[in-house]
Image (cartoon, rainbow, N blue to C red; front, side, top):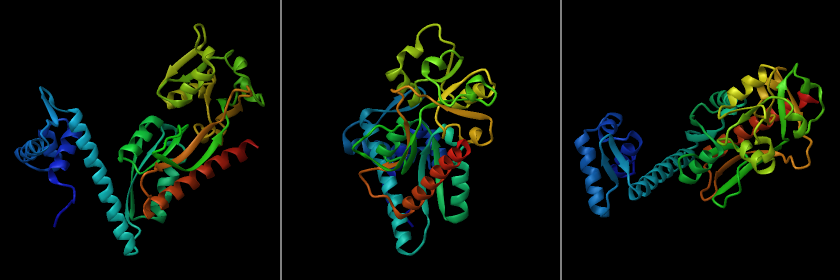
Length: 310
């Protein structure tokens, strides 16, 4: 029985690109290295262009190879989607969905979502990758993800937002911090305290630089990191405050470790969280089930945090 409708040469090229060498790809696929090399050479002969540069440490994609591998991954995604559709025609809620989520979701709503999916839809398998908003958008557009739960997604014609919510911009502090007793705070007041700040890898930092560049002048008491977990650990210490959203700090807000204080500056626009898909393809029924459960979990998490603050 044929294990895949995607031609072997494309599957092999994809794995070599992922593994970085024919030998490693052969081990991953349990196929002879000579067979993989032969298929790739034949494919290069048919296309008339090299797909890989043979370098000392292995194989590196050429621009033509990158285009071919991107096509192969789209075919893989289409094949999985078609398989899920066929199963649904038989009344089987079974399939595989690839999700991209943010780092802060890991100790937030994400475990609850996974457990709910396992309990209510045990035949739907999940592949969850943690990445930035930029990486999530690229994965949706490139066909390597089906759904993304992301912050501050910029409008794009090729992406479709299924659900979104506004997140007031503010800062979190340890419950005993002087700022914690405030109803709101201005950015000018906030910079009077040490700040744990996200790096440019995170969208909130880019937002701050665009709107409030003066925060990053020399002399500010700032620690900068690309780890939200470190930012939260520093805020938890009681010495730092951190600019973030209610969803980023949901577990700590719910257990009373943090207090959320809205920023009242007129230019402090709300952040957003959304559930998005590739707008060029219809979402499968299995995908819709996952997206609905995911959306409910995010919305419920936000509602719980806001009830706690009220």
